[in-house]
Length: 280
Image (cartoon, rainbow, N blue to C red; front, side):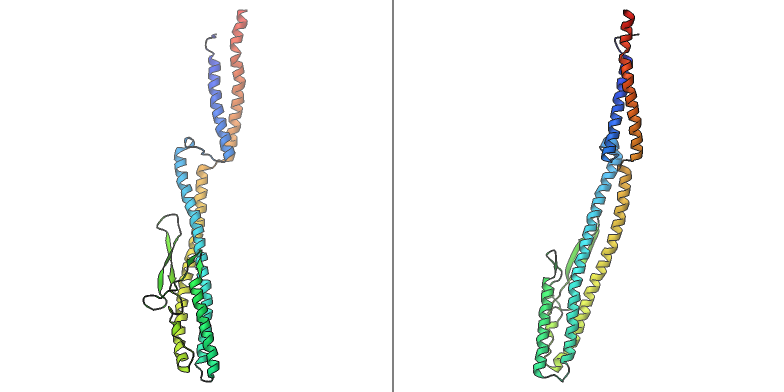
């Protein structure tokens, strides 16, 4: 029996410190919900999960970008829907004016409606915007050949710099679609105007077709992004999140071991006292 070094107490103290650290880690994981709270918990897992988190954040923002893109396409299509309606009315008026049964005063009333429609046409073309971004170019194209693309609105639809979608922005206005050349003041001019209006209707239909294709593209992209986001989040969770059942089991075990070591520490400390009893 020795009293200089209480080996039992030293050994018990070492095990008690180990148990304390293990218990604290279990408590940290249970309270945070994360299996990895610092690099020391799992260095490789931390590196992988951080890269995945970055990609997940990019996917979530791309989803918002795509939703904004759908809104942009719908806004532009809404304006073109009304323009289509006005073009249909213009054609009706042109055919009406091409009939020789109207007096000059009646024909003047038809001409006045034409001018009002073209004014509203130009107002919609110049004022339609999405978040202060003009959706159409109301200036004149270099070569009048409707429909003509002015430029593109570029959408970021993925987490990498190569995942882009260009939405066409068209020249739009009464002059760009040659509607300023229409004239309902005579039978002959009204007859000529019908072909011009038909060409404008076809041009606007092409614009709407382009916007519709872009919107369908964006909706499919959004579906793909949400699935990828879900799968990536699940994978990241498996790496980084705490398995609560396993951790509760580990916590219970560590607590029992710690309580046992505390009990043994009191026994180890009492050994020198036994020696003193022998010396009495």
